[in-house]
Figure 1 (cartoon, one colour):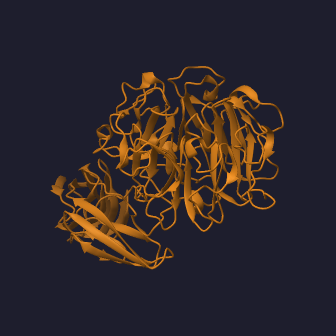
Figure 2: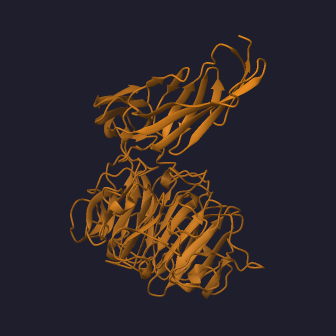
Length: 633
């Protein structure tokens, strides 16, 4: 006997009581999209482990919440969204964005329903930047063709989906977007590190492919080492580099590098071509936290950096532009440490974060934040990109930054440096300001010789500079708004303040905001902060109607059972979509004439008479097998 007890379309801003002997559905929306944890990704992902607030867990350090090339920038905001501005960053790849713009389907239509996960930029000086986005359905690229990916992989400059090697997601065979831990781009090269620790490279530079300089510029290659037997490079937690060379940090603390004009740290001369990953000799006894590299355009020689968990920073390689910070211009074949400009020039042994210029092939420059949240810079200072007084420069505190300033994040771009300073609503900018690169709404062409904070208000994931209201999950309605009838947990920072609703259809219970209708809910947070006085911030959250098509079918395995026999009722709950559902519960009361034996759910839990399924994704189903004995009555 088969009967379909319910086949209806439910709207989640209502609670429906429907009987399957007595059936109850509570309908919601599946949560995802946190700033610290994306909708898909590695199990140990922590996108908030960033900047001056980062810890020493090298496996979860997030390098790319702040990415800048020559005059273009992408950031991950405190809501988890990606925002972009600067030269050639519009949807057509030619228009300049003078102020931050969210990367979503409304602004970049090719995305459709895909959710952006990671961003990368590569450039070769002015007007040559290419942006790369990894979304839940694969890779996208836009702007100057051939700058990162071979020109044959894109059809024009417009934001577009990329297919590589017959794979519609643009990734190596067998690799899905959720398998990608890190996405890194520089001039002519794109590299990914997977959750399992593999490194794949697609490069127009044969030696950077890490496969023995074979193949072509339109194929992904898994990096191989020059260790005995030439095994694949494995157990990698970070892959970084600069134009012409890459380096990788493994989970055991070893570091490998490969490419052109590299140094390996064992006091041997520069290696002109290293087509396989070679293990570097590191300073004795260190445990690496971060790695990085930069390149001198005049020589194409590389400089490498390793930040240890104890705060000691080390540099190696090309140094003609003082990019190693050791107060000399001597290239170093073994590791040296940069020095502070204070009396006695002490070693930099208290560094919290290092940001070498890595995405453009032009200038070798470095910024660091130490554990007192001070900013220091050294290396090439073309057009005041480091806000220093000389070019090149030994380590110094940049102009417009004071020792009392609390610097939370820094990104060294090809021609710019940008910082986040605590208590400032806007980021700080130094270097060449042009074509919207400062995000201030103008296309002024000038050199910002000291840091200018008259920019755009951007709160970056992990380094929010002022009090903020952070939704735990993003909206997952048809147009990425929140679903009317659903709820979201709010995480205001810093803790200790008061949340309230200013206007709109919603209610608050503690930190849980429930959307009671369609519209814009304005939430306010008031807190006494260490930025001085009471800070008040507001956030708008918009809702829409969302639909899921749920049904329940109940069957029995014996139509004519005998008295005393056991029979099994199978209840199947299904979601025909198009959206995911949460909070799904079926209430099934066993009718008179039977003695209950057992209930076994395929998902969720059973506590008579409720079968609590919980989440039921689009296209998914779950079953409950209820066994009972037939009574004489």
